Length: 334
Image 1 (tube, rainbow, N blue to C red):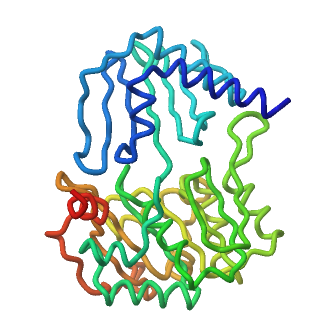
Image 2 (cartoon, rainbow, N blue to C red; image 1 turned 90 degrees about the horizontal axis):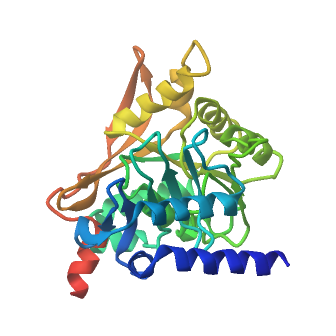
């Protein structure tokens, strides 16, 4: 019965989407579908970046989609609860909906899961990584170093984290993945995927980190570090017997990734444990989105703390004239 209900919801959702948006979600080059309050549909694509389409969605249609998704996940969408996020009933895509009065008219975005898991070799072939850098990353994984992947919105953090999770060095480990939405893909046969819960009673990243410690993980992977309590517990876990962790964080530069952890932790404690951050994070990989594509901007190791300043060492140099691996692959295949 449950499966039949889910199938009906999925079919109803497909009907509500309309042909253009449905086809966009089925297009492997489309990363994200965005519908603004004016109804204009925008797409973020692998090969052309963000583009405006000629399609305009009626506000009533956009609102119907938002309310249908809310119904599917058991959330409330009305004047008192005008914003929510969840997972679509089709392919697990990430959905964010906004209703008036937060916006003049209903608006939403749909972020697709990666269609393909790229490898570190793909990044090397695309010019985004050097052979030496890829070798160092593989060594870091084999030695159970803790790796933080940073970057801005839609910079390719999750795609790169999936590339690390596809490496043979972790294939024999027991890995617990902690996420808000299902985006990570892991090559290890022994892995467990845990999701937060935003409806009451809420289950947070911190709750899942604490649960994970009792699930006998070899590695703890956080899809996105976004709250102070979860960040603090993650660092403590990484630093006390659960090394080899991986995670992503929003930041504008590689060193800002460490400062971002400080800012998050400062939300829950008066004393920011910079020494803990320096001890727990071994490697930072920063990705950047540019007009010409997504690229790996910087990689450095964290060597410690001196005079309250992080000691870092760059890992080789990235070729900043190259496009990111996805754009390079698209260029090669065209």
